[in-house]
Length: 87
Picture 1 (tube, rainbow, N blue to C red):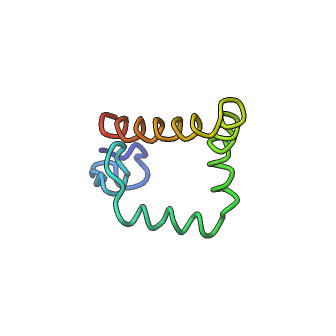
Picture 2 (picture 1 turned 30 degrees about the vertical axis):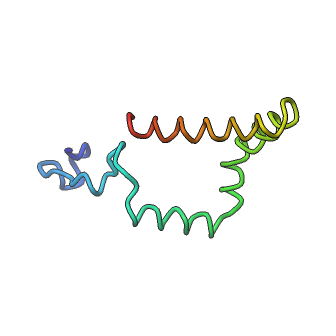
Picture 3 (picture 1 turned 120 degrees about the horizontal axis):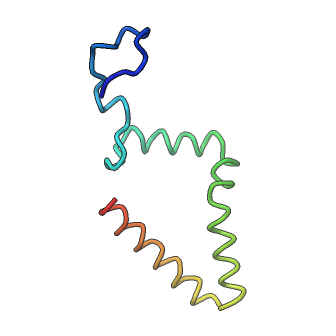
């Protein structure tokens, strides 16, 4: 990967991919730790991030029942696991 800004001094050098954060790579220990620290420092942001999932769960529970809401959660978790392996 090459630097796109010629004034930065890296114009003829390559940037290591470990510094860029290549999509599709597995979550390493440092990134997982920083994600946990971010949630600890600002739980409001984490609550805002998961609020659509909580609203969807509550809506399905209200309309179809608790069993269907749990089934939806299980299906979404399976879809995320399978999707994570292929994308």
